[in-house]
Length: 308
Image (cartoon, rainbow, N blue to C red):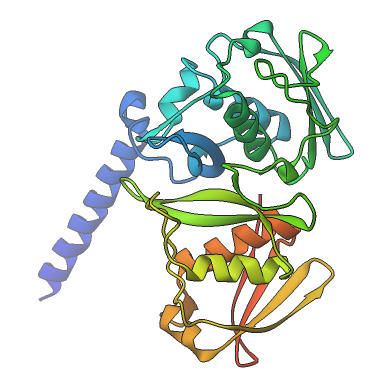
């Protein structure tokens, strides 16, 4: 019995020694093939197969703001080396050959200066290009507004249609705009995040420009309850019987109290991501609130904080 235990100890010691030897001398080229689980993801707004400006993710090990800015712009530029980072089913939109000449970020305002190739955009895509840039760059929490320059000249209008632009560009510019108005008075813009199924589900934001006396948060919830946007196959997983009983905004938090029909969207004690993210992203884009607290009949069930 003693000999058997001694033999086992020797065998284990030998195995541990061999394992340590192999790890120490592991070829560098093979080490590089091991998945890097420290990879981070960052949201980016690219063009999907249906020509919607859509939210997806790319890998990013960049920690500094400057690295994030450059990574996003390169990934948005056609024929950039960063295009290998783009998920299947999406494509870049900034014209090929466009370079960042310089940029400056101060007090939340990013001034970014592009080379002249930036103007080689079609009239059909010029607005989508701006939406893609604005929404991608403002995923970085330190960037609130953007000023675009081309060869040092401030871009004051769209390159082809010559539609005038505001001095500062932010998410109030809208994205994938849909107009449903009968008068120019009492108009509201509400951006709602719907789901679309590609290889995986991803979010498509639609900015609704409408005439309405309802509060924006009510418009968001009612839009998501409709489940499908016309014939565009954009979906929502929010049950049509869900009712927003009341809500309360406190500093940068918003408390939403729903009826118990929302329980159908609970999985493993948490609100399903498809419902939670659709509501939260919509509220962030429309109201600028990044912390959402979900309640059912006054009992907190989940919370969402947007981190960039």
